[in-house]
Length: 77
Image 1 (cartoon, rainbow, N blue to C red):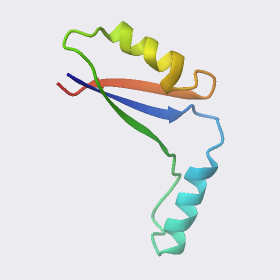
Image 2: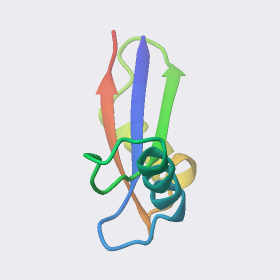
Image 3: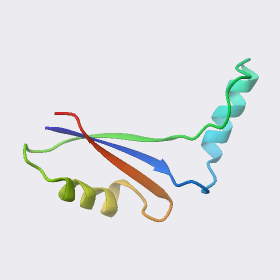
């Protein structure tokens, strides 16, 4: 089974990389682009039946910084 983890910076945390992406898009002529936030997309192959709690534990201990990042776990099947 594949689990997908989406990690994003918490609201209020400065995102210099997102700002740089937004500025680059504007300089390329994409003036309609507003605020840009960047994050991480992680695919993890786990045994069938792995619990959401086990995946959440992985995120809290390694995959996301609990101080500055939020995460969402999606099961890909």
